Length: 222
Image (tube, rainbow, N blue to C red; front, side, top):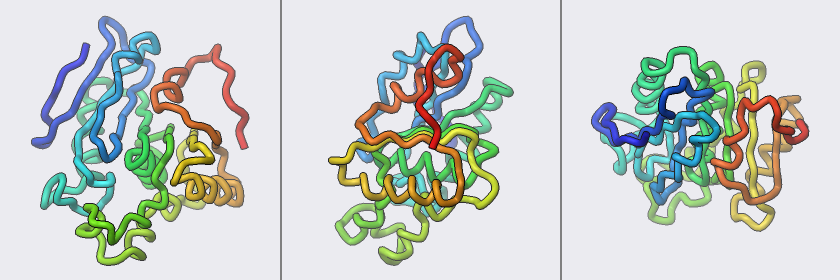
């Protein structure tokens, strides 16, 4: 069943399976287009899906004119959306995932809050989003410079000891964002952090649909 809720004054698309406790909750962070995926396709996976709407906020700890002058997207998710999920389904694990802008946001939040988000999935993550600074996007108002934006990137929030239990990201070699994803892969390898990196174009839902299923063959860990 899909409904639209309001949390902290912001829209959240909310899907929950009928008459069953979800195996996990997919917290989906949208791309710059704000599109919510066909979340009812998770019905067979017996998963819930929560999709907050945050404009072109880049899911950052910086406030964005596209979201709220006093509340960042990170605060919206961590202080408001996550508690709402926990109230509805106590003890059910949360998988944070996204594509593009949402992919880098998912990785960034996963690295910052591994206890909240034990599993992180991302596709075509815009990890080098600082390259867009100065091109008239909301990043220009959120960060004082390209370097300030770069220093707030996902890869710079990796804790030396504490990481999500499962990190899985995919990016096709032809994507604009491939080099940033490949650099993240190299950094995680150097740090000895277990993760899965797939060099192909995948959808968020296809990556998440098998999460927790014991009979699904997983990709090799690197």
